[in-house]
Image (cartoon, rainbow, N blue to C red):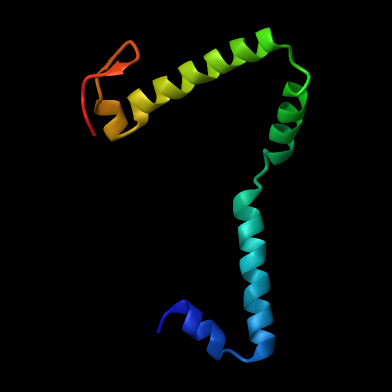
Length: 89
C-alpha cells in the first residue's frame, strides 16, 4: 500500500495530524537557518547599480562554473574551452 492510500484510510483526526506534520516538514525543508540572511541580501541587491550587478553576476558565474567542473559529477568530466564545450552529453 502506498503512502497516499494509507493516508486516505486514516481516521480524520489522524489525517489532520499527518497533514500538519507534512506541512511542518516542508516548511523546515524550504526555509533553513540562512533564509533571513538570503532575503536581506536579495533586497539589498535591488538597489545596486547596473555596473555593480554586472560585477556580481560575473563573480557568481565564475563560482558556479568552477563548482560544476570540480564537484559536479558528469559536469566535472566535461572539457571546457572558452564558452564552447567539446564533449556532448
